[in-house]
Length: 465
Image (tube, rainbow, N blue to C red; front, side):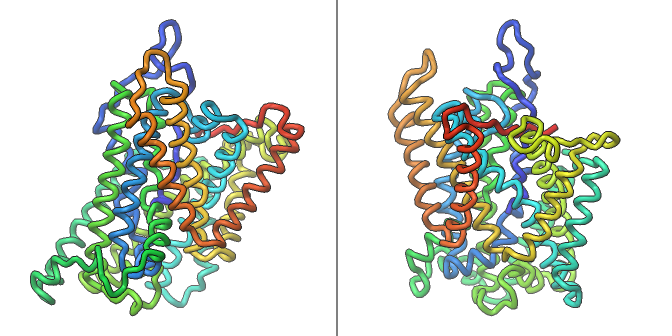
């Protein structure tokens, strides 16, 4: 997954760059710069940690649900790219909904995004802990998640930041290992079953196990593979020809992610089609690695997943801490506690510790699949908001000089909204209940701070400092 995808935001401010008489960021990024940036955020191993859960939810049709989810995500990607051109600023879905639809609805979108930020370090602690337990089964799960979260917190308190260069190295290494896996899987399947093992329709459609209800449940989880593609839209002010390149790059990143995810899941299924036979669906991918590459590939991939998820959790924790700091600084939350900056490190150290504590406690209370579903709860609300914003912005209230087109401006974003809504309905009921409680808390808090919604709602600061 890309919990990986810690929805990183660049510090952008309106008006748009290039407006006469106003300062703006230098437009230096081309199309491929954006695509590479997007793939770094999403990660090409995005579906790997949830492969077993996808097989379980879809009853052996993980490839199918990822490809169906791709349709909704590509439409949503178009809406993200188009909105980024109109509002090239930090905040992404929150900013678009607040400025296009309603500030109060924007607040609730931001509140849902806040939940996502908090869940990213939690999920990113669970994944390496499960992988390490496969290597060293004697270590208690709680001890592993504690040490992982402690490591993230300690590094963030020191002010160390992950760099783009480190992310690029990680992308290249994971790409090489995934490529090696595909080669070894092809050899394994050919030796075991010949062409029938290499090429099969069963991962896409198996009449013996295909059920519509399980497909919808699988789709609702599959979207986790795409989380983070919206990060491309935050660079709108840095891009040459943003009206073309931002939209195109966002769609291409979604498409590449879908194709790569489907390819990886196809070979996972072909190597071990009986996913029920594995010891733990949460580490199904490690059983596949061991089958095709033996203990060496099993160990190497375990290490890679640990490092990549530690990095994702590390950046997710600091993003969550800085988000809470921005809310404290603006007195959205009590300034004395949440608006504190450590005078030496200039870090929101209390918030970093708080997020770390919440992440560790969450690893003990929330099962991995429940945490993934809850993260998708907030993501779907953001996706629906962006699609609806695109419809309103381009069709109902078009910018000056824009000629409305019923397909691009109305039908496409409305289709994206409906698809995301259907996907949202497919989430397990516990995730909907817990997510609903979270939204109710946000609604009550907003009503209190705005005197029953009479005042302008509180603002979130999604800028990373």
